[in-house]
Amino acid sequence: MQSARLSGTTRFVSTTSKRTPRRSLQREPDSGDSLMQLGVIGLGNIGSAIAANLVADHHEVCVFDLAKSRCEPLLAAGASAAAGPAEVARRSEITLLSLPTPVAVDEVTTQWLAGAPPGRLLVDLSTNAPASVRALGARLAAAGCGLVEAPLSGGAIGAKSRALVFMLGGDLEAVERARGVLTPLGRASFHVGPLGQGNVAKLVNSLVAFSTTWASLEALALAAKAGLDLRTTLDVIRTAGAGNFFTNFAVEGINQRGRPSQFALALAAKDASLILDLAREHGVPTPVAAQIGQVLVSAIGAGLGDRDWTDLALLIEQQAAVRLELPPLREGSAPPRG
Image 1 (tube, rainbow, N blue to C red):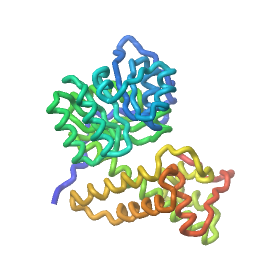
Image 2 (cartoon, rainbow, N blue to C red):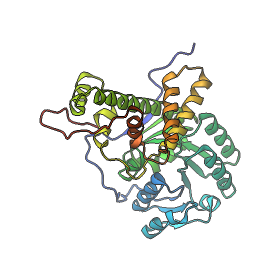
Image 3 (cartoon, rainbow, N blue to C red):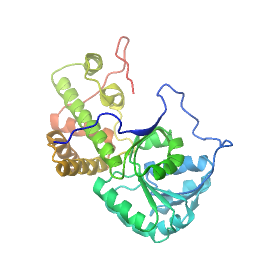
């Protein structure tokens, strides 16, 4: 049986306290700043927000996305466009990838390598299988290039507000080089080990986030169906020790349905599949993870795949035939806390 080391495994942690006032969304360079030539491939919700912040930080930013319209706001802000991943590699010291699937990462990396001179660094922000990350790193190393995995938490809102949390995997020199770009984009970063370990950390975090969210939705549906006031129910949960990110904070937006998608349920289902693959690889029984995977498959089957993660509430409402309507905060209520 493997023993787990509970200390000494996290190196070079950089954090910003939640109590620290939010920084300006435009960072003025100081005498110690070194502006870089950077590339961003994949301009979805997260990639476009990151690219916009890099432009605001006065870097030379080269962007590419198959949907050319996604480039236009960034070009207006001062970025330049590339014809493809190979051109991004030629023009950029460091390239950030923000892509939806492991297959897309593999295909784009092949194109990127066609233009990458030795010494280029690729930073993959995507959630991927740890084994695939290690294989990708070997391909880049053979070409004289480096790879840092940097899966993240915080979504599009965190990307816009520079509140992302990065889970970094790679060798120390490459990670420190990547941190020069990533640190101004987030509130914390953790170097958790060599390539592959960053995505292990991300998938473990996602398992906790997915399972606590769904368990909380089940609990609220049960409370509502049994006649409890949901505001009072939340007061109990927050006070009696069962609180989590969803019940303590995110639930306050439960009445707002149909938001623009920040993290689609189909992407959550992809991540749930990666969690199960990782558990099988290491021989760890994860019945809760398996159930969450089925929940997300059901959400896709119910036509919710393109909907935002917050609309997972619609699934429990359909299944339980109940409406989750949260009354407003009132005097004496346990306040939300993020």
